[in-house]
Amino acid sequence: MINGPQQETKEAFFLFCLSLTALQITYWDAYDGQAIRIIDGSDDNEVNSLAADRDGEAFISGGGDKLVRLWGYDEGHCYFIGMAHSGSITRVAVTPDKTAVVTVGTEGGIFVWQYSVPQSLADL
Image (cartoon, rainbow, N blue to C red; front, side, top):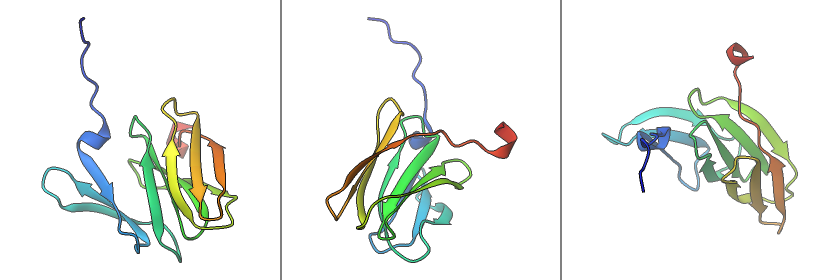
């Protein structure tokens, strides 16, 4: 078996992390452990869950404000917000084929959302 060149992703260089009581999402440099960017993940409730797509183009957040957010990884801008849960969002995930986002809430709801790659105005 011959393996082709390995594709490096952004996750290889950066990590993002949050605490369960945080309103902010922090990007951490994986090399030296320094915070390199902090963005507001919610205006008034904690962020409970994060998931990145496999290519590192975007990540999804969900939390106590009952909102699902799709963020551009490079610029840290929130491109889409989804509202459907009546309870806090506890888990978010992106399907491997990047066609859907799955979210789970404390009310027992499981929602499947259409995934869209974020595009800046410069890309349009």
